[in-house]
Every structure is written in structure tokens, then in C-alpha cells.
Image (cartoon, rainbow, N blue to C red; front, side, top):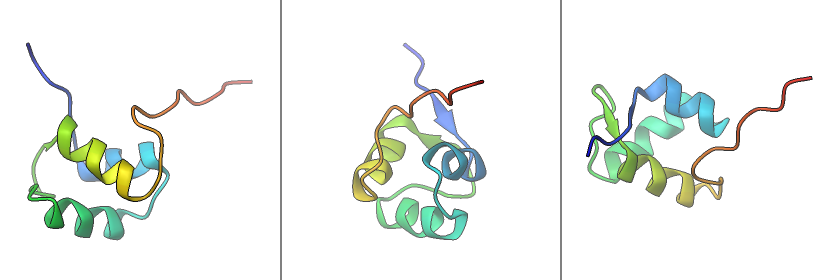
Length: 61
């Protein structure tokens, strides 16, 4: 079973959070912000900044 991975900029966009702050949190959680970020680490970052995970689909008008 393949797990989803994210790039840092993509994760920050999905969480609607600052890229630099996401980078710090990924490092603190043992992830590599320069490489693919695992679903597990992404979920932990979202929990720390109190964002829903998985991210809600953006509403289109």
C-alpha cells in the first residue's frame, strides 16, 4: 500500500500555513523538509497547528 507524500510548499499550501514554519515543524517531528514528507509527519504538523487532516477540498464557486 503506497502512502501519500508531500513537498514542503505543497504541504504549506494545503494547511494554509507559512512555509518556513512548516519547515521547522517537519524538522522537529523528524522529517526531512528537503525531501518527500510522509503522510504521518504531515498529519502531525496539521495537529500541531490545529488544522484538519486530511485537508478539506477547496470550495469552488
